[in-house]
Figure 1 (cartoon, rainbow over the protein chains, first blue to last red):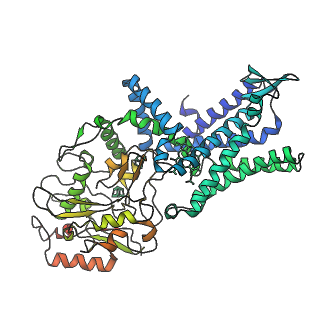
Figure 2 (cartoon, rainbow over the protein chains, first blue to last red):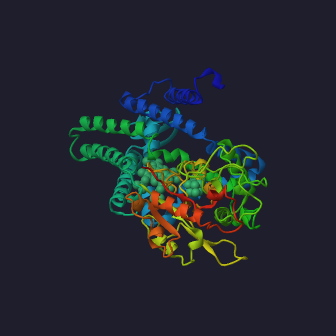
Figure 3 (spheres, chains in turn cyan, red):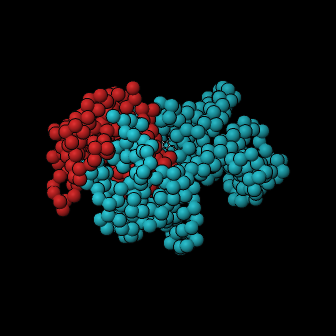
Length: 375
Length: 180
Ligand code: HEM
Ligand code: SF4
Ligand code: SF4
């Protein structure tokens, strides 16, 4: 579908997303026959969440750096199908499903995050599945339920069997996971001095409080139902719905937006480096291997797209040098020890106070210099 | 913040006190984020300290696909956000000065943040507070300008002598997040 029909790319994808959602409900609920009106509030909130997500992601992929990941990934997938799919699969398992890298940051952080992430994704799967009618339970006879997925009848289960109990209690289980994870995260955020260095209440604590209030109000529903014969169940249900709606509307705009961004991590080894031996790019200064050709190419393309000029007079770019060479070049520049390669353009490093290091004015032969250092 | 970081590379005696101090800073998790390197080992044993310039238009942040490098209201370019960094290492290749470091185990970039918990309260970053030879200083803007003027007057410039016109290009750089 062309962008010409819409005000913007974001508008286009929002429209596509909305249509797909409604159509999927239409199909799954046999022409809206089974739609559960009690879940209508959740439906609207989920649609808002989806549109927010789409708008944010569209803006995100409009950044040169982010779209370069997409371009490179498509290229790699075409060029080396087998190696690429293997690398993506392995990284998805290690990095997204098991999140092994967070384990390296500490068992506490790993436990806390596994509980939050999978508790949250599990709850989403159940709630959205029921709200959009992708999944429903049909009563076949007094003793048996059947799970219907996308209007296709699947397994039958005894109404009081172990499996059935697990299914009914799915949300309670994921909510308990979330509760433990969120409490662990809050404990760490309150007691760890290190995280406080850059912590902001609105960005780091607020999402945790939102998750907490959603899970607690959800669990209270079960408590009221099971232990207190449905005491203030209706009020609680309304309150829980309200908290979920607020949470879903917030989801695309705060810290939790890392959820749709993180899958990009699965492309990194495929695109650049799986093992150290993949790095074949040699430094233009000292000849050591420091990167892959793909990555230097990508970085230079992104810098160029943003008109950040880091070229030297001999035609090389600073990214053609390894990190230690770049550091010593900066020092030699200041000490007037650089021979030959001089920067072709100032680097805007400073807060507008002077033209330091690589940032000295462009050499303009014959013309008056356009920038003079502050004295 | 109304102080600036001021580096005089040739004052460095290679003691690496700044690196030891950096490891102790809040949120640095026991790893140093600054460098002490040889300028040219084949020529002599002169070392230099190196820290982040806190660029105004940081190449590192511009090439980050996850937008993980945030800039504080004061202008400090922070280390990668823990939840966003996807571990691609673009930033380490784009930084003109080779600053960001990468931890392959934890799969995240970490870089000099001017000891944000200190500098946001106008306290000198760790490296500047311990450097015994004043190679790294955290000083007033005026004091820094005075020091630079002195160097030009004394023609204290190494290497090939600059001409009268471009002397100012070779005085030490200063940086940081000065706002008055
Ligand atoms: C499955 C894909 C996901 C990945 C790969 C991922 C990755 C990460 C990473 C790397 C961190 C930083 C953790 C640390 O260094 O301690 C983080 C933090 C966090 N994530 Fe996720 N995340 C995912 C899904 C989710 C989901 C679905 C939620 C649910 C709401 C979530 C909520 C959080 C929260 C609240 C934090 C901050 C914890 C704190 O206070 O420190 N994440 N995530
Ligand atoms: S390594 Fe992390 S901070 Fe650096 S560019 Fe990649 S995602 Fe951004
Ligand atoms: S890491 Fe490099 S590019 Fe980023 S702010 Fe520091 S000096 Fe500038």
